[in-house]
Image (cartoon, rainbow, N blue to C red):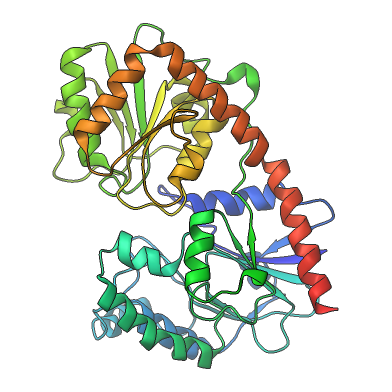
Length: 399
């Protein structure tokens, strides 16, 4: 089965879960599936851009300007013009999404669109949309737009995207053969947004399983180490983490906190006692050095798409303290694989951290249960088997 993968695959210092999942798909394709990433197909001339003006118009309409540090390869329109025109539409927050208008050749059997709205033309192969939390949730919880503003944007955007023929997870899913979501939370959001249940499929996000002999092998038994991993420090609950750890460190000087996140300019990490801060690290170093030395992962996010760091921690047998929002309660089962706290509540977070320091046996049990759940639901082989079944189902829906 020849599948064109339309998804983020960026390089650089800050990669998010979308990029990580793209590379996992390319490195671990389902059985009998041959992936071609759309950027490779463009370079090789097997895929061409189509209706670039409409792509730019949709992007300008939906977004105020490109996010900082993200390069856009849209064709004839230079980035400075994009930024200039974007000032005319300042009512929508920046989102890290490219709007793609492509012309797919008939050599592909299926198109798998992950995290990108896409327009593939009338003669394109059948398409599945693979989505995260949902656009409405992002606007409300990530960017803080009130319900009235979100409803106004929805009324404005839906007719435009349908007229342009752009497949979008929330506004225009009808042409897609299946809409794949990673959580029950996302399932409910899309059902409420009008996506029929017959079109939805639930499939967890998969990752490589760490080798048993290397799991948490680098831990220093003389200290108890908490870890936060995530690029957007404040959104990942950074304020509560710093406040909770400062209080905890006074009681337990042996406690340590490792942070892998972009350092906000207003923070001087060298002055924070017991904290080791990395502005960014290669994924391999996080897997080989950071996670194996971690006792508890912290992810008390204010808003969250899925929680890739939680899945990574579960694979390493690390218990998790996370906020009780979005899909996180599906991953962190309270009292079984970790603890849940309200977002932005440093006192509740500190209590949970103190409990796991004082009950290391319980922390070990949480971690072991998380590892079992990872192997059952998130191990890459299990997920790829489920994805292959969805591909087959989508193709059978055509015939």
